Length: 261
Image (cartoon, rainbow, N blue to C red):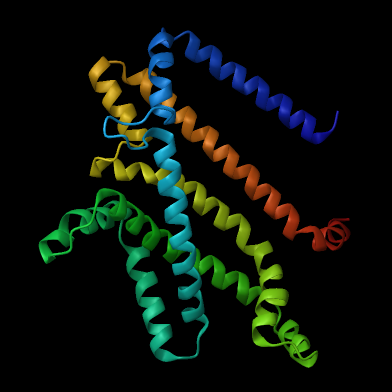
């Protein structure tokens, strides 16, 4: 039996064991079946808005997109020899990595209105997640770019490539191999931290699980169901990450195998 087959077998056994434990806890599976469409977001809210896991995914995708833009700009600032750009980038990264995400969410949603800037719950959540994770992702991108040997750039210039071509065709493919694993972990963490937008009244997965738990006095069923949905979504992101790692690591497979022999 191959290694991957053994891993899948162990996973299956552990999953069956977990299901067996939950089945012995006297859970109300009828309630889970009743509330599952709402938790998954298959039903719209009374106002006709998306909710549940669908809203969680929307918040995560929007935050990831803006975080990526912020991270690239910050990484360029960290790599820049311009003192103003470097100072701005390091100041931003230090502030958002040095303060708790929950505090940032509360400042943007509750404190900014005191200064006359009123944002919706959705906008506040996306902004907080984008700025927080953009600071962490910037360091990941910077380290990936810095890991590319300087001789690669010099060789590309000797071939007459323009700076944009060097960045896109030479640096980016090599840096991505280093960037993808930690960046994937950050995006998975962002998916789970999107639950913080529940404090703004958004009907995302965590908010609905707590609401249904309070109204039915069955917290265990609702929270375990929410946890299972988060887990499934995280597994899907892990699969995407694995595909990207495989794609950008193809050129290094042979050399790495030789080094381990």
